[in-house]
Image 1 (spheres, rainbow, N blue to C red):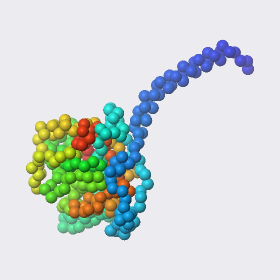
Image 2 (cartoon, rainbow, N blue to C red):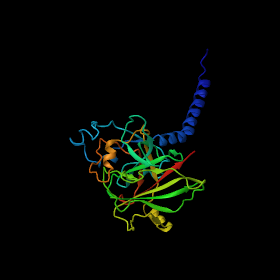
Image 3 (cartoon, rainbow, N blue to C red):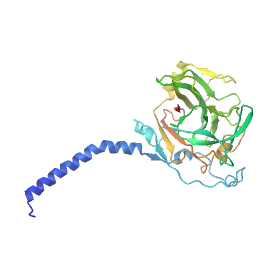
Image 4 (cartoon, rainbow, N blue to C red):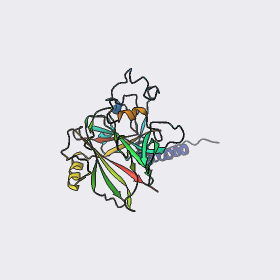
Length: 312
């Protein structure tokens, strides 16, 4: 085989062009892959919790020792925010932790903390298990939520039916109730419904054939809202909802705890969300299943829409 400098130079030039075109055409796809594979650790969420003390390192009420948990990671599970500031830690980023639980009927000994369910004249024990926020619930599923805020504030949750055409039903305040303490602080969990409520769960049950889920609007404000809280459901007007959304609504990013789905409710979470309990979550206790990160105008108030999907 003979070596022709001109021919090989031409071939090298063609290969260089092809390589450059490959890089150019692959860059958008690579960028999209990198965006959807972004991960975070929950350190900036849990740092405001109290440190693990000698008392909390001891045994729980069930006798199981509390051990430091290995560092976990979260993956980006939503579209990346268009504003890059919501994607990096900073003073203008607020966060919200939400864990959605689906109840599983206890068979045998089971594992995890339990919820006592009374229905149709009998009692049964159920174990709440973590699910990701985009899980499709079947009709009849029992569902609960836990909400945690790394910053202080006051919690309000509004529920609206979500329909296939994108419209929503009337807005109803489902938290707080008169006996509830809706003042949030790091390490405090709020269960919805609360453990002491009867029933202590929601049942996935569409009100019409075209209802595809529920739209839960979670609001944490720096000061209490002027609302007439009573033991009856409070309807929120569309005008008021629009005002709140304009004030505090921003594009959010949703991160899911990797490997968290299916994990059972723990004694620590049960104790931290008890209405009359005094225990708070420590840095070594479980982190939320889902973390929402939102660009906050004042880093004090935050509004996040959490969608619960119905499937078949």
